[in-house]
Length: 101
Image (cartoon, rainbow, N blue to C red):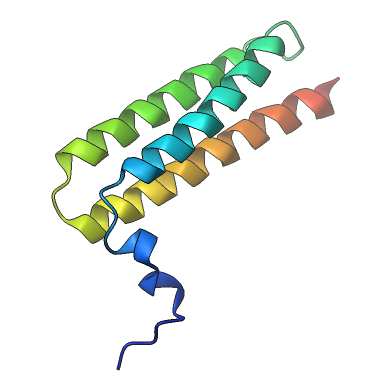
């Protein structure tokens, strides 16, 4: 039997086209990019720039996954993981900058 309350049984992870994940990730990436852009000159130099590049690359990978992966469950799981990766990447860079100051 299927448990409707199981985490992997959510509608967002079963039937969505992936557009929602791209929109949410675009908002998160946009906010991250603005913050990282403002932190460019803070030590360690290059950390914020690396975070910017990582954020842009992760979002571009999301677009490629959205249009390149046909299996819906795999596509949505990858999009969810990549969205979380954008947040984690921003947090790692942010904390690196904060702790080095």
